[in-house]
Length: 125
Image (cartoon, rainbow, N blue to C red):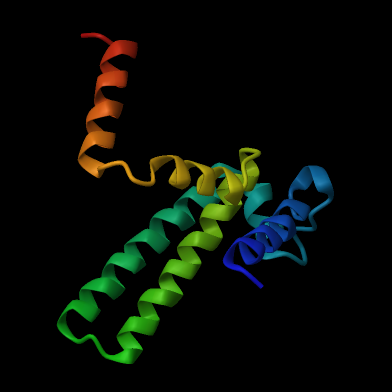
């Protein structure tokens, strides 16, 4: 199974837990978060992002296999909760992958400058 397949399958399960699709908050963690709405899953995304940073800081001082695996686990949690947000807003992992593919080969510095220029066009001061 490819990474894209894994993400697509997980996204399909998450989408099946949406309240509009009959997700049961009594039996599903995902359905419970979705029923509570964006504040609940966005808070989890913030928590998980912080845990990724903390795990990476720990690995900075000791790059043991255990610390590396902790980073992997925390990133998996962050991705999982991010997939919940994508489902809530009617998006999918394919949308994110398409954006990453669009950016491939573009300098991060150039990309950031382009976004700033576009923002100035939309919101001139």
